[in-house]
Image 1 (cartoon, rainbow, N blue to C red):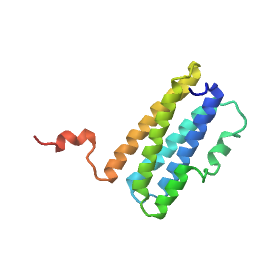
Image 2: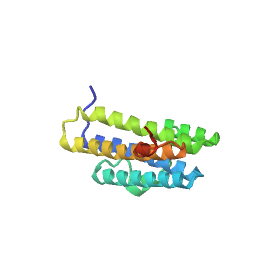
Image 3: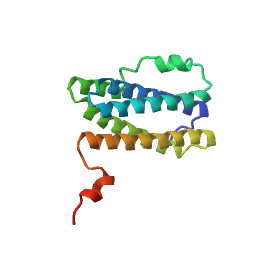
Image 4: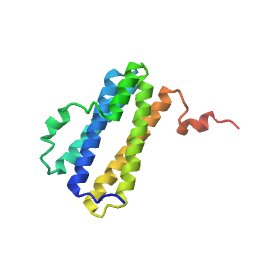
Amino acid sequence: MFKEYTLQEALKLAIKTEKESMDFYRRAGSVSKDERSKKVFDLLANEEAGHLRAFFDHYRGGDLGDLDTYLASPPDKQSATHLALEQAIAAESHEQKALEIALKEEKACIDFYTILVKDVVDPLVRRVFETVIRETQGHYDMIEDEYMRVMTMVHSSDQNIYVRE
C-alpha cells in the first residue's frame, strides 16, 4: 500500500521526475554524434521541460523557487541515470547506451506511476499521475523507435514488409 499523495506532493514528485529526465536528455543530446538521435534527445528534453512547466503552474510550494531558476538549476550528478549516462559517454557508446538507459527509466516511471495511481483517491492527483503515465508512454515509444533505428532493427510497423511466407 502506497502513501496517499496530496495534489501538491504529487506535483512536486512529477516536477522532480521531469527535471531529472530533462537533464538526462539534454546531456545525451549534447554528446550525441548521430544527428537523428540528437534531435530525438533534444525533442524529449523540450517535452520534459514543457511537462515540468505545466506541473509547476499548479504547484503552490515555494521550496523549488521560481520556474526559470529551477529549470536552469544543475542536474543531480549523483542520480543513477546521470551516472550511467556519464559512464556510457566515457565508453564511447553513448547513443545506444543512452537510449537503453532512457527505455529503462521511462518504463520504471510508467510502472511506478501505474502502481501509485491505483491508490490515489483525489481526482486532481489522479489526473496528474495519469497525465504523467500517458506522456511517459509516448516517450517510451519514441525512444524505442529510435533505438531500433540505431541498432538497425526492423520496427514492428515494418514487419509485414520483411516477413515472407
